[in-house]
Length: 88
Image 1 (cartoon, rainbow, N blue to C red):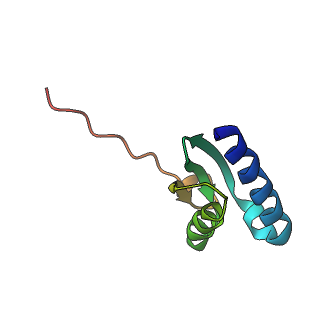
Image 2 (image 1 turned 180 degrees about the horizontal axis):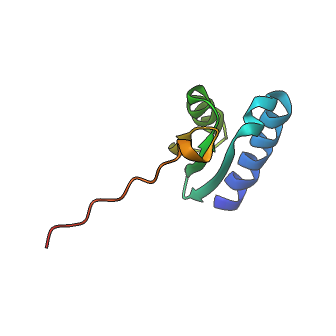
């Protein structure tokens, strides 16, 4: 069912981009696993985070949408945050 969900998600995103050109300022990718969809990438506005999440929740058979989106328009907006190291 991953391929079926992926195809439906692609169609949903394509329609949304045609109807809402502002979403085209996003740079995102999707990962499908079981009935979960994970969206990763960058968006121009904070409101777009919720917009992507709501959009992907409308895809048939999706049970969970995980969102990992950074907000910004310039490279300086995306400072790297180092991951903490595990104590020895």
